[in-house]
Image (cartoon, rainbow, N blue to C red; front, side, top):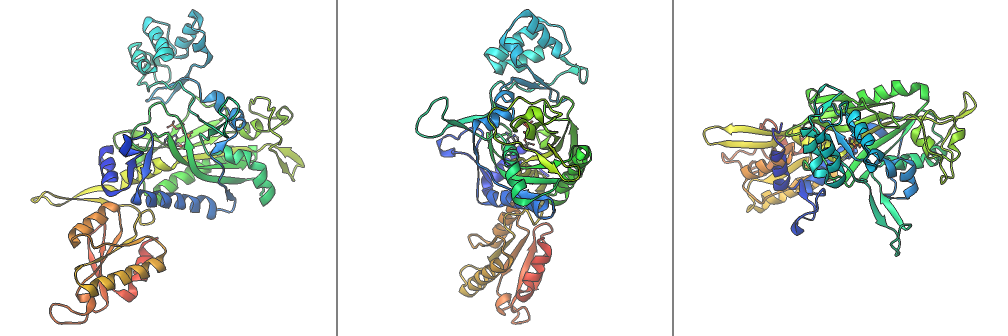
Length: 507
Ligand code: ATP
C-alpha cells in the first residue's frame, strides 16, 4: 500500500487518473478532473456500490434528483442555519464545538460561555481565539492552541482543526434576474433528494417498510480549506442511502447497515480490515440519535472518514412535512410553512399513519476512490542491483479501469498487429468491459504501463501465435501469452480458451 499521499498524487497525474481542475488556468481550488483511467475506476466503484445496495437487495430503489435545489428544501433540512455555524473540531477526540449566536454578541457572558463550552475558564488567549474567529479565522486555530484548551472529552490539550465559519452552501442564480429571490442552492448532499421524493417513490412502487432509496451524484460544499487531494473537495460525489424503518426497528437495522458496509469496503473494494475503524460520535448532530463513521487509515492523513452511518430518527421526513406539529414527532422540528405534503406512511398492521425513522449510510465516492488507490498501490523491487522498482496497482479486477490489454510483440509485423487487434475486438465484444490495444512502446514498457494502471491481464501476440516459432514448430499456433499483473507469471493459452480464462478471473 501507499506510504504517502504524494505517491498517489504523482501516479494519478502520470497515468491519467486524476488531474487538478482547470489546470491550465492555474486550477480552481477544491476541484479535480477524472482522467481516462480515473473515470473508469470511479464508475466501477459506483457500479459495484449500486449492485450491492440496490440490485442485490429486495428492499431498495434508486433515484437521481436535481442538483439545483429549491431553497426551502435546504431551509427545512437545517442547512440554511446549520451550515453557517462556526465550527472547530478536536482532531483527537473528534469532538465538535459550534458557536452560533454566542459569537454575535461578544459580551463577557458569552465569552465566559464559550470558555465553559470547552470546560475551562475564560483567559486572555481564549479571548484572542474568539476575536480571531470573528475577524480572521485563519488565526483561530493557533489562538486556541495557545489557550491550551483542555478538551473535556479526553482531558488533554486539544489538537484543533481550523475553524469553519461560513455557510458551506453554494448559491446560484436561476433565471435572468439576479436578486435575493431568484436563487437556488447547489445541493450540499444527495440525501435531501430522497426525503423530498419519499411520497413519490412510495406511491409509485408500493413499497412496505423497511425500504430504502439510493442515489449517487455530485454535491457541492464551499469547504473553507479543501485539502489532501480528493479527500476534501468543493465539488464531491456521494453515494447515499435513506433507509426507512419502523421506529422500534431502527437501532437494530442501523447496526446491520454498519456491518454490511464494513464488509463491502473490505470484500468488494479490497480495503484491509485492519485499516478500518469505527468512530462513534459523542456529540451528536441535532437530528441524530446515533452516528457511526467508518474510518480508513489513509497514508499521510491517518484514520479519517470514508462513510457516515446515522440514525436520523424522524427528523427529516417530519421536518419536510406540512402541519408537522400534528404528527407526534420524536424530533424537534420547526413548523413547516412551505411544504404541501405530509411525508407519512400508512401502517396497515396498526391502521395508523406513522413517520418512519431513517437510517442513512452516506459515503464519499472520491474518498472511496482514494482509499482504493492507496490500498492497491505497491512498489515492488524487481531487481535491487539495477534499482528496478515496479509500481503496480493491485486493484480488485472488478475495480480495474482496464481489464485486459492486448499487446503485439512486434508492431511492424502486419500479421501480428492484425491478430492482436482482432483479439482485442473480440474480447471487447464478449466481455463488455474495457479492453485496450496498445503498440506504442516496447513490450516491457507496455507491461509496466499496464501495471501502473492496475490492468489485471496483458495478452501478448507473437510469432508463435502465427505458427512461426523460432524452432520451426507450429504447436503454439493460435495461442497467446497471458501475463498476470500481480505475479508477472506468464501462461500460454489457446485463443479459443481466452474468454473462459478471463471471465473466471475478472469477477
Ligand atoms: P467531514 O466530517 O469529513 O466534513 P461530513 O461528516 O460532513 O464529512 P457527510 O455530510 O456525512 O460528511 O457526507 C457523507 C460523506 O461524503 C462523507 O463520509 C465523505 O465521504 C463525503 N464527503 C463529505 N464532504 C466531502 C468533501 N468536502 N470532499 C469529499 N468528500 C466529502
